[in-house]
Length: 104
Length: 104
Image (cartoon, rainbow over all chains, first blue to last red; front, side):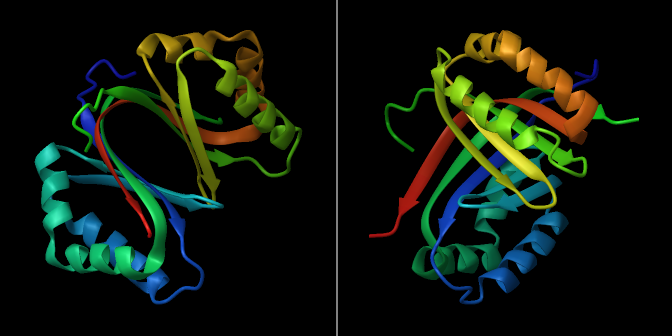
């Protein structure tokens, strides 16, 4: 934990996909590109096996709320519900501390 | 968001693996089994592509701290630093709200 640690926010998006791509990969890439341009964006990590986990990190709750309401993202959310996801869960979290390891 | 939502905690473990298994898969399975037996454990989700993301959920900060100090887990952490991870980051988060979607 850094001495100057300042809390920030994480959105944990956990999902199970429907079968087939149905335009998902293209939209997922676009959403990542757009998220990175949003104010307050810090970082995004994604991985998928049986479940997919995408964690995006944000400076404030407002920046998360703005991203949720961004117009292209709203369309993606609608398509997500209609076509791409069997199930998903979104958790809004406050990152209270962290530590890191780097192999030398 | 449920009306009776009670904050709980998430540990976001993001990592880049070294090459080769070197006993990793076996230990990862064991750690998941042991975590599930810990007091305060709620849930765990894992996925790996280029990065691996494991998010475990806990009722209290104490349950996270107890799991970090659990003896087998301490050994796994040491092996992780020596053999399995090129890089990792651990974030301790408070889950402040959540919502879920389930295809009908």
